[in-house]
Image 1 (cartoon, rainbow, N blue to C red):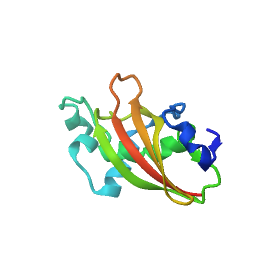
Image 2: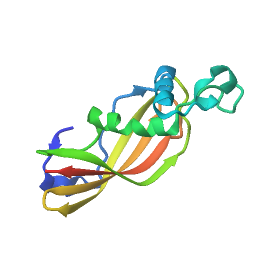
Image 3: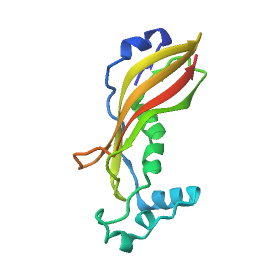
Length: 152
């Protein structure tokens, strides 16, 4: 994605960006996330016991799938603000976990800028509509309204 000048951000509102590259949520990544967050629920960790659930196997933590947004956006799918000193997560207006991601599945992000607010001179709050697609599935894993702040 080419860099967008701050004064041209409003021109990007409503435009969908090309989807990100696919990224895999392997069991090893799920295990590392469990260790990092102390969330060892069997549905994420115990492959044999998880086979007995409606999911038919282990699934990624919802927050692991959500935490992939930064990686997916950096893969060329998100807006890049030219001359930004930094960009930071600002939060979410809405997050919905619609479908779990089975271990070994790949996901990719779809991003559309829906709002730009200049909070202070050179400080821009961007709201993006994000959908996390699961390869081979008709229903997305996540739909969210993600807020990022850029300082130019």
